[in-house]
Amino acid sequence: MRSTPSPTPTIAASKQFGIADLGKVTGTITSLEMVGGTVGAIVSGVLFDATGSFASIWIVCLACSVVMLAFLLASEPIAAKLRASVAGE
Figure (cartoon, rainbow, N blue to C red):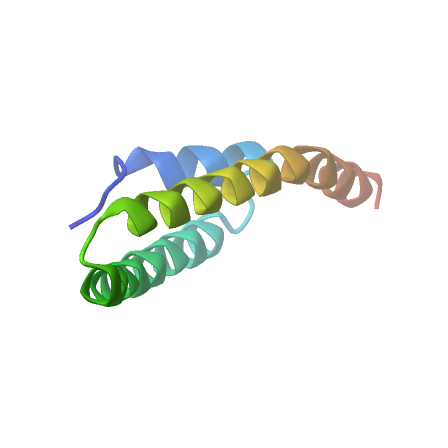
C-alpha cells in the first residue's frame, strides 16, 4: 500500500524533468519509493525490537524527511539547468 497519493510522483516528475520519457521517470521514482517503504518497515521493526520504543524511529523518520526536503529543494535548480541544456541542443 502506498503512503502518498498516486499522482504525486507523476506531478513531481513532470515538473522537474518535463514530459519526455515521463513513464520511465515516474516508474523509477515509484520503484524507489516502494523500496524505501519496504526497507523502512524492516528498519522500524529492528529499531523497535532493539529499543522497545518508537521514539528512535520518529527521530530517524524526521532526519530522513529533512534530508529528503534538502534534496528536493536542491533538485529544482539542477533540473532547470538540465531542461535548458536539452532545449538548447
